Length: 328
Image (cartoon, rainbow, N blue to C red; front, side, top):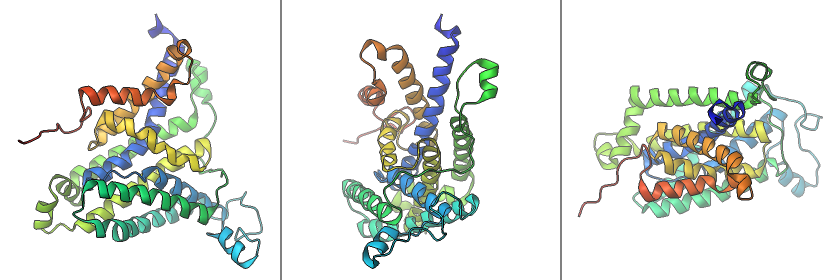
């Protein structure tokens, strides 16, 4: 029976760990949608931009060096004499600097993009985030270059020898680290949302914007905070994906895999993002290994979207989403 097959459990665990990575990206979508009703198409690009900035700070790369060299005819790319292979700035300090950049970016997005569009239709705000995604991708290219970068923040890599010796399962250490970080992040966000004054204000804005404004809650401040938190989540996701696969512009496409996660878990639920990610991760791995060979393989490219479509037909609000009630 396959339940007693070690390979089956290896696939399941691999899927759970992959699902955690998907959930990290989906968390950013949930936070912004829950507080503002905006579906942030740029969340994947935020993860890319955060990872690019972190590598740039670590290696001492000069921002906009390609543009500066093109204008001045110079050939300077790093503050040091090296070629970016060594860490000029300690990783911890580089992470703090990147956090500062993401918080500043959140303030700019709120004041330049969102504030002028207050009270506009949701589709207008959604289109604005699409434009924001392309702008951020272009700015990231200009600031740090388009070449693939190696991100090393000291996370363990390679298979876990302890797990191999104990169970015979091949599990990557980076995926275990991502799972631990995701659990810590979800617990922190849940405690922040439920037990802090600012968390309660975020939930009040999510429930009713006008009522929140009437009791003195600043919508602009709330948006800035929630976009800052989403930027921090994007940094975590960017670090995990970048450490695993390298920092490259295809990293922005991870947002597409977060869409079926949100459809399963619900657009307004933090636990839903985690559960949806785990379901997608395990489902696509099991389907790929056991059904994929029968139908030509490469099922991981479309399985998540097929599963999300089924959920849309029978439970459009997702597993943890609020039930849609239309008043007539």
